[in-house]
Length: 429
Image (cartoon, rainbow, N blue to C red; front, side):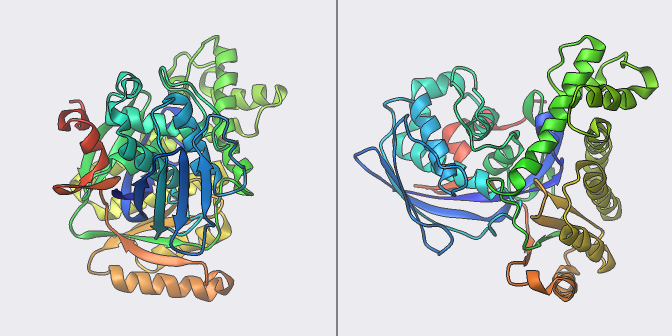
């Protein structure tokens, strides 16, 4: 029997930067999926939730398994199909029972956490990390995070062939945070190449407050095409840049670093002109401006503010990140915008919507001493403005927590620490 916990994540900084080759500052939170997995002797996978949100699912571990888009079962089915295809003959089924403390569609990466719960249950029950195909292709914790992201977006990873994903075009930020985060700190990740740059202690006198606005940002439903537009604008900007510059760059990060720029100082406007002429996604220059603001200004400055324990500056940068998302990503709904302004009015140092957007949640930072009163005032102001959202909305305080945990003979442990040596879990100097 396997017992474990798969957390959600908070994207503190790094809005839609990971798949563009940028960086992110993230943490796991103390809400997520608690699960128990019991091994079976056949190839059947069952999932049963202890609440009422998800209907029971029974799947056969077969490479011909057909996930159903639009259903919550799309996530476990996609993960199961990918594992069967990448590790043929290595898996027996499991019965998974679980409960979740994450609001559905909250932007805390519940969909990725759900898929990673299925992976952890199957991998731990079948000792998958001992499989030769695993050890040859997945050598470090960040490798595993990227592989799990590829299972979600459908891409291949080294010798592990790609397959259908869940329909989103995304990166590995969520998976890195959910897998590798450590309690008491924020993690600064790079994604081109992928790696853990630094673990930054969370100041003792600070507190994060999170509000789910009640508008679900479910990527399998209405928000899917909007979410993918943000990714498509990165892809289109890179294609146009390469065509204008005669380059073959692989990420937006490489494009913004490349010199000389096509069009000189007006290269961003040239991107828009050429993109429009070629029928690309709109406002490519704004998409690049958001990446530049987040990756080159907000993230390094926020890291310095954390180290200095400068709450005022950290909060200011958090609010600036929100404004850049609203102005350039077009992913902020009115409820989230209200919550951001309200948080500052109620005394938070700063606040920002996070995750895919188009609903979801917002994170605010305040002092430990003020946190409880702030949360109550923040909730009350929102309910007064959006009474119809009150039944679905959720407000709570969080602390940075460990990534996926499993119970061992010695007690709870991070799953990556049971798979990889401690040395492989530490960042390179």
